[in-house]
Amino acid sequence: MLTLLIDDLRSFTDDRAALIARTSAEGIALLERHRGARIDELWLDHDLGGTDTSWPVVEVLERAAFEGAPFDVGVVYVHSANPPGVARLVGTLRRWGYDVRAVPGSPAVWYPG
Image (cartoon, rainbow, N blue to C red; front, top):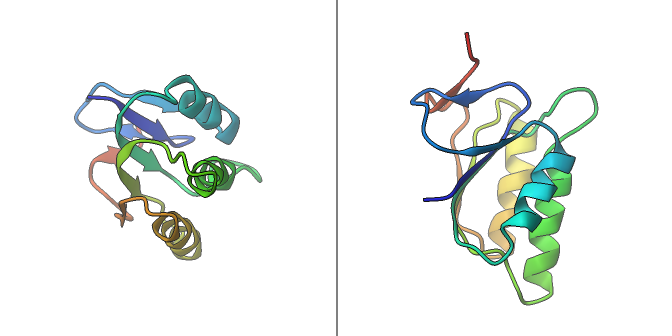
């Protein structure tokens, strides 16, 4: 099972195997590295520190779907605590046919320590 987590601070509380990106640039690199693979779960936080957000990652997913070759993602979970950010990411991804779920405050991800 391939799980990608894009979040500047949080990790999975159950220590599940996952590839983690802390910036949008790292997130895009992870997506591109696994372009031909099945990504079972993609977890997105909206705010990634400073002015960085996961929006550039969503634009990559959007562009791929627009070009007729969407990424093979089972489910996208948007776990951000930013309601307008969640709405924007979820709406865009749904429009392009991705199975996306808003799970703000999910107990699956939390701050380490």
